[in-house]
Length: 140
Image 1 (cartoon, one colour):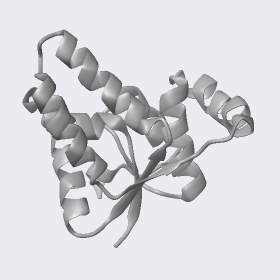
Image 2 (image 1 turned 120 degrees about the horizontal axis):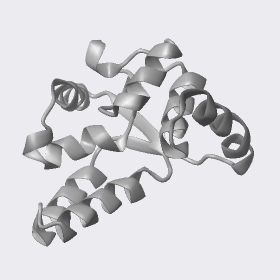
Image 3 (image 1 turned 90 degrees about the vertical axis):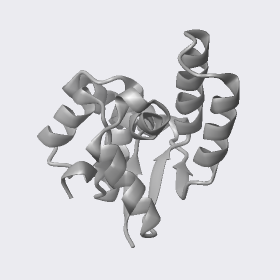
């Protein structure tokens, strides 16, 4: 068993069939074999926000959101608190260096600090991870 950093984009791809990807399937297989993940403490908020936005656009139903949230809550994902010193220092530096949102920089920082692979579908985050020599789950 091993651990990796998971961002919201991978998990959301499971909810939206038109966003299916090989990387998202790799993460499913990793969870099935007993691997665990970590994510910043804001991860559930990011997932919920995307689902509520999809509901407002009539892309998914409220009932599908509820089912999906129950499934996500059962995933072996540990949420990591990030103190303000880290956000205002290291996360800010990563964000500026790579032109990332603070949220994406937080995922990359977790991977860098832990020496962990990163699971993401976000193109900017993939680019930054490659520049930082962070292994991507889709390539394992």
